[in-house]
Image (cartoon, rainbow over all chains, first blue to last red; front, side, top):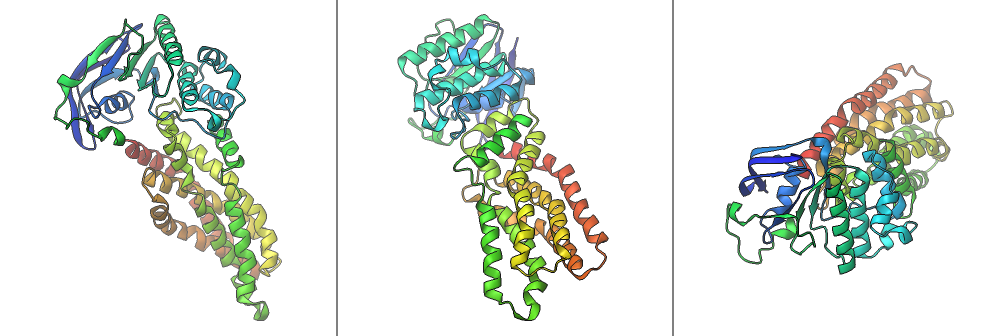
Length: 205
Length: 218
């Protein structure tokens, strides 16, 4: 198992939002987290990434296994696409960026500054960062936001290749990723409080 | 760690990086103070060490909130915190980058501005030496303050209030070195204390700042 949780509870802003989560993700597996806005998908991913401690329960994973991709892509707008990728590649000591550039169709953009890219292109660059980390477990928070249909397919192919090579992924998403083999974990049964429909908590996540 | 240092230097030097803001402030202060104080009576020469040190300190303060705020806004701070780079190392590198683009240029510029303030000739070397030893503290303490206030709206004001009291010892000993240098007195003690504060800050504050960042990122 790359990732295993037992009886995990996570909190946002001091309020426990999910409790009693137990799941395992092994090599070659993808887990899709589903739940309405404010159900704690982002909080769960941040806890798995080690950015915040769990309220209760355990997360068992190697700290060297995780590559986290948040809502924000962590791009520097005054650096070029190539410089952004090269920075993360050298931080992680992962593989050189060429394969990531090819996989997410960024070859025509490498000399452009990240600030000049469209929202979807920025997202593709943010996802290309995952490939240069060389980490087995990807924690992805709404990875397909602002991607068009072709790019979503591109992304699904990247995830599938990652799984084929023995990687794993935990993906929080609302939309269909085109990964029929992925297991789906509905977070609704684990929620500890009832939110008003269309709660706006996601804005503060 | 070197990659982070190079990235931060590159960001500071590119457009919008804010490099030069502190230097311009320092320059303006050193030009305006003689105009305000007037040249007669030797007043200017007497207050020059204090003015130069206060100017360097405030110039440093101008860019402190950018150390972590920009990385926090675009999400790269979260990604750095989950990267294999230890957060303590990241803090130290960001403080070093801040010093290289503010403290070091200030040190190089200060002797030139000493002329404008009628600083006594023997003090020029001591001014540069005191700034070289003292400005790393300003960047390191500033990084700690920035780590405490990261994520707060209008955190810059709070950052100034937190950091300025911690700058006081450096200011006192730094200005004292220059004053004693100008009057030809022994200055070993304030110089040693200035260096001790810098070394202490460099040794301890990366850990404190990293702990503050971890709390703030929750």
